[in-house]
Image (cartoon, rainbow, N blue to C red):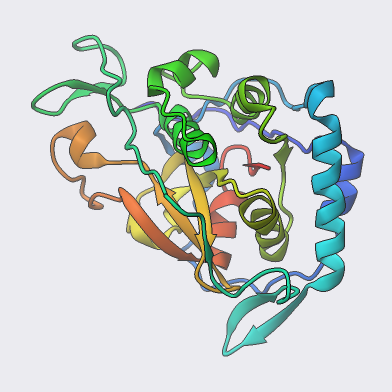
Amino acid sequence: MDLHRHRLSIVSLSTVIVLLASGGGVAAAASSPAPITANTLTNTGVADTGPATYVPPTSAAAGVAAKLRLLADMRSDHTAVSNGGSSQVIPNVITYPTYWNLSGVIDHYESEGNYCTANATGCYWNGSNWMHSYTCGPASTRNLVQMLTGTNNPEATYQSWEGTTTDGTSISAIASTLNTHYGNWESWSVYHPTSASDLWNNMAIDLYSYITSVVQNVNTYYLDYFNGASLAHFNTVYGWASYSTLNIDEEWNTTMVFGSSAWYGNPWGLHTEDLNLDYAAVSNSISTDIVF
């Protein structure tokens, strides 16, 4: 796997987004492991090159603006409180239920049906096929699109659209692919959450108001189910189990890529994660952003 040498900072869409992101209640920090910085991570598919900003196309501008208005409205209805030492975001309960999952969750694993040339860089023999280890961006996009539209494009299609290389995929390329090919369903931007509650607000808008999952850039060290493994990674969020958690659709399957579980196990599957730990994973990632 490739080691990151540079830290890419992909900023928000505009000053408007930055201003909106700066408000709202800040959830108390969760007890989390010692910090691991983004430029020390092993890569599963997050490019550390690419444009520093993402500006959605004109066709997506109105949709993005509508999301930002919802975000501002949500912020006026939310309060961060402490509940037994665990941060909890309390939304407008009439609009946002205490439990929510998208129906028909799809969890294609990374490199599923997308095989490498033998002995190619970043590829591993799993006993049956040569598997990519750097396509978490296309895999996450594939899961999001199939849940949203029902269309099951092969991972290789998203790999091509997103310009994925052995260095991985930039988060801007994911947003661009979604707007270009699925802009008739929704509009996407690249967003920088400034707190755990800000992250939850964004997730709730896409998951509940737009009925679509959310691709997030993460440093896996902060996610409980990675058992301390530090990977630069993309995955998707498909719901929440409470106002202080997020449900993650994880495509990284060590058994299918390497032929056996890694030292940290096999993270593949559906997981419920503490909101503050997920925010730590996003805020310590390569881009510190989500596709919103």
